Amino acid sequence: MYEAVIGLEIHAQLKTDTKLFCDSRNDPDERHPNMNVCPVCMGHPGTLPVTNKKAVEAVVKVGLALGCSIAQFSKFDRKNYFYPDLPKGYQISQYDMPLCEKGVVRVSAKDIGITRVHLEEDTGRLVHDAGGASLVDFNRAGVPLMELVTEPDIRTAEEAAEFAKKIQMIFQYCEASDANMEKGQMRCEVNISMRKAGEKFGTKVEIKNLNSFGVVKDAIAYEIKRQTAILEQGEKVVQETRGWDEHNKATVSQRTKESAHDYRYFPEPDLPMMRIGQCDGLTDEECVNVDLIKAGLPELPDQKKERFVKQFDVPEKDADILISDKHTAAFFENVVSELFSIASSQDAVTIRQAANYLNTDLRKLLNETGTPISEMLVTAENFAELIIL
Image (cartoon, rainbow, N blue to C red):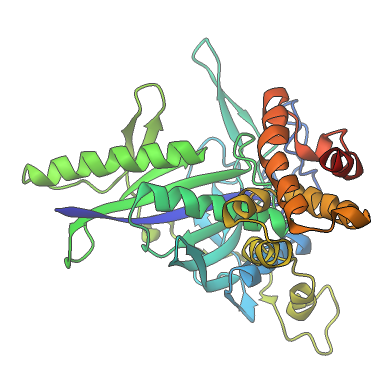
């Protein structure tokens, strides 16, 4: 009997006004190709990058929310490879001195270890037209990209999807990223191998660019079956990178897997070492103030759920739905505040009823019309009045 050993790599575009190393706009909604570009993010000779401090602070904020240790010193490295969407011929990333390391996220009463969270620049985007030509849109090139890497602690497709959902919530609560998978603002990659209980890790296969939680589950489930069948036939799994074919509901081979030495990492010579934490005697431009970032941490999803259950007597199942979207959680709290302002409605039954209507009838109407709750015209006061009626 084989068990899966799974690790995730999650990439999320950060919510900054400008790109990571230049002042071109960071606008995920831009529909015209090659509008938000400049000589720096296009890799023109002689240009020099300048680090966007807001992006560094966003990654540190996420690291603190995940219980990571924050590096006192960190640097950028060049990751060398050629691809048409990479204008410089290398990507500025982080190799051996990431911003954040060794965190943990609890999923289904189990701790999933976080190996590292680091910062890098995104690549451009390839577009393939009907005539067979491949075009490149560089609007995304240079956008700040946060990468989170887990320990190989995940064992099932369901665990992986649940973990990814929780990470998305944390990114959103920290306001580091909108993490909208439909817009490509968050992408998942899966590393998976199979082994018999008690054995060492098997041969790892990477599945790239999974763009929904459902696809994460489907790709892992398929790969578990594929690798198990190979091993049961006495054959060896090949270390490679695979993609997901949505039409055939199967993973497909893309290329043999590269190792770290294939990228020829070396320190980025055009960017200085970053100093983090101990800022005595240094200006804001010279140092990232971790204490200031820690003081600005929001109430995180698990904390909010616990408070909703204790303070409002909301069932755990309802609390899970309420906190799954920070705008929904905020709307619910505003509704409760409105209910508290009405003397006859301060009982827990009324609050539970509000949670129930919000999670069922209202959510159904929003889903049917494709309306985000943040854009809904029904106010918290309206909704509270409806519950009283």
